[in-house]
Amino acid sequence: MQKKLVVLTGAGMSAESGIATFRDSGGLWEQYPVEQVATPEGFEMNPELVLNFYNMRRHELIKAKPNAGHYGLAEMEKDFDVHIITQNIDNLHEQAGSTKVIHLHGELMQARSTGDDSLIYDIDPAHPDLHLGDMCEKGFQLRPHIVWFGEAVPMIYEAEKICNQADIFAIIGTSMNVYPAAGLLNDVRKGVPVYLIDPKDVHTNRYDIHHIQKGASEGVKELKELLK
Ligand code: APR
Image 1 (cartoon, rainbow, N blue to C red):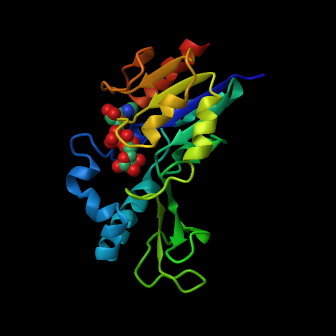
Image 2: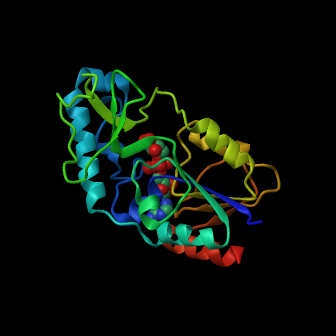
């Protein structure tokens, strides 16, 4: 049976695809206050600003392509039972060919009804913008299908279960600042090898981590070699 390789990814995974990270210098939260664009209160106060923020992100994603890191993880499905748990709202893991991807923070290319959480729609890349007045079939305004700060993270339970079953665990391109995602490391059993791919130091509470101090593309290449 193939070993279960569980990979937690964050914004740095897609940085080499031209997608902005959040907390690096020049990151998104420097330019756009989180409270305004990524909270339910911000959406209530100025829905147009929030819709526009995500419209811009969508245009950025449509131009982007997966990088060698995304492709490398997809290729590893030949040798491992790879499960990706991503904080990213882009679909670059899927575009690269990964088949088991959990999105903790939602998906940029989907819209959701503000009046009925079960109504989720794919956004057509040919018409990627959401506007005020765009309604679900029940007549409620549509919003981005994104988990904002202060909102529940429904996929966390499934993610915890998978982390608990990991034989090998890797963390790529996340500053591990945001919970509950960062807490998933606590669900990885003792003795399971943990790799971290990030050009910077990332603080965690686990001391047996093998740090591959590289960007995602080079880092995944090295991880593949190490796991051979
Ligand atoms: N390769 C790998 N890692 C990189 C690269 C790269 N080329 N470039 C930057 N990084 C690393 C940074 O060093 C940093 O540790 O990616 C990490 C990005 O951290 P954040 O910007 O904090 O992004 P992330 O951890 O994904 O944020 C978590 O916060 O704002 C919310 O919902 C949003 O999902 C997001 C969550």
